[in-house]
Image (tube, rainbow over all chains, first blue to last red; front, side):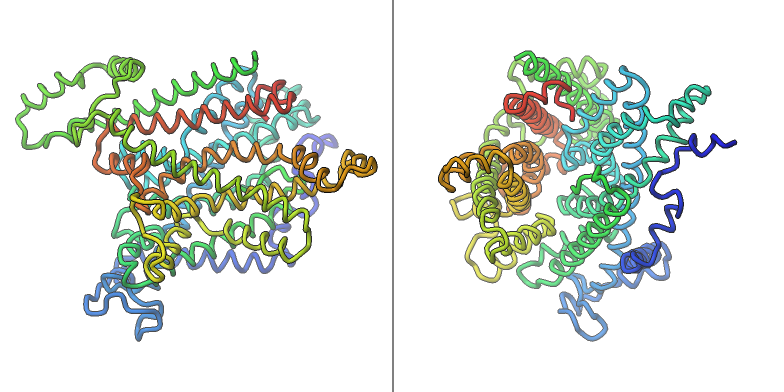
Length: 299
Length: 310
């Protein structure tokens, strides 16, 4: 089976070392550690929401200790308007926001791959349909779609995830389509078609697998934009509803007490900026390694 | 010309589909419209049915859509379910505020972004260049609603130099407009600077210099004109972002524009207002994209070949 390697269409640059080995290498060690810290903090944030006996950490109210400044006894980062510990609020909120970010990124990436490959590989009619769908989607910025969804199913966690996922994918679908247009002319794709491999199978085995590096880079950017998006939508009252914590929820509750204390808005804001800076940096770094031709634009 | 007509025709098809999707979504939830007007559980069933019949809510969805869209096309936008005001009047009352805010931000973005980008490029490597680039990257890293809150906290709550919200005087406009312009401004500065530097070392620039054209003419007439292309494309993209972010910024600064109206209408389940305002904003975005493509095709004929799809 000497012909096999030429037909598999493995991503060319990573064939020798494997994609995972490339990502978790010594050169990336700082980014790997940073990602692990972020993921563990997020996991802790999700666990304290899911396990009932831990919920008191961020939900316990103390009406005699409202709006305590940071570095107060028992409350390292202070308390909010109900006397809840702001540090635990932020960790729980980070869990929600990160989960939303990852969920939205995965949904957008899958949708973008499907529509992009459909448009690029399944003929002219499919391409026309895919283009119209992308252009209709383009008419709705996330906020506008969130408005429509909130009118349909009410403001909720689902509204946020759908609003962000159903708007993000369109840009990715355009990138995928462009990539597929050049991939479909490659020998391994033609060979597979001549051998009678079904188009759907070629799409998964040869097209999608070659788009993995680009997809990883975009997933990271999507997580960053979705975390900002969640905060913005929740801030407008269209997203996550209290008492569920999220960075946007903490921020919007804190804003109501902005004339009395700065920490309930500044702390989530600073945390948001740090996470987004980290994720954008990670995305830029990965792009340097996985996408040397610069197919993905920083958003 | 043919490209322009095709592109506009396509935009109209997209707008039609957008209106169908929005209408279907807002009318799909069972009893949604009626439950925002009447308390369905306590009102007698006959009253509910009578209301639904008199407002055409029992008709099949396509018929309801037809009533709505023919109303829109003849200038009848319906009435608000909450305040009973004509929707057209609500739009008239708020659209100028949004236009004023978005327009000011647009002017700030390009009025300050293009000259500062050029100055940074001309003085490449100087302290001025470094300051501009640092400020631009810094601003780009902060989500605009966080910037808005920080601005309110510092300038309104603590320093009392600017009002925290409202729309009574010019000073009310300053903070929202600057915050809204911050992100597109930093993008404009970066793109303008990069594009300008590229063209400063282009062949035609060297030829002009060799012919003895004064340096200020080379830079401000020839290089600037050639370097403007990417900035124009960016500006067209930014119209969509500006409109989307206007909604957010308006709510934060209680600016009485379309965004505040839209968010209030959703939270009060005022479907008629939500529908019209959503369609209005989506239409502007689609038309702006179409006009942008047409504008680019005039500047760069290559756009016409692949139908504006890069």
